[in-house]
Image 1 (cartoon, rainbow, N blue to C red):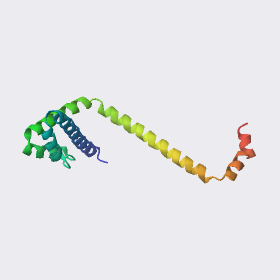
Image 2 (spheres, helix red, strand yellow):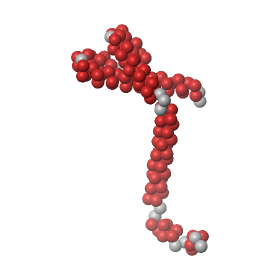
Image 3 (cartoon, rainbow, N blue to C red):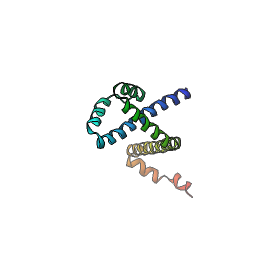
Image 4 (cartoon, helix red, strand yellow):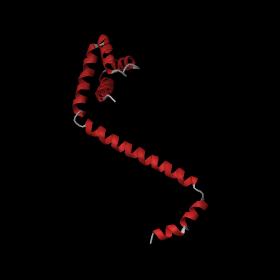
Length: 135
């Protein structure tokens, strides 16, 4: 496991996601101030936002002012969320893992309960050895 590579890949994915969020913000702003430009940007961006850096590069070739605007918004978003992100990610993963474990235990418990016959359960309940253990 190459943790350094994992960190690089994660940073790149996060960067692309922040580019996407910046695009959404700019689209919302343009939708109110310049709907035709918002429509153009929406059409231009369709299917291109997976790699944020390649997207920005291509947008620079078409409309550099929009590329600069998206980069500015992306930088602002990154600065605002960076402080909370590590703790939120760790906490989120811990909670998600705990929930997945809980659901798994519920499923296997239900499978075990449904696979035991009522006769087996009655035998277990009336087993004198078990009654002696509780004393």
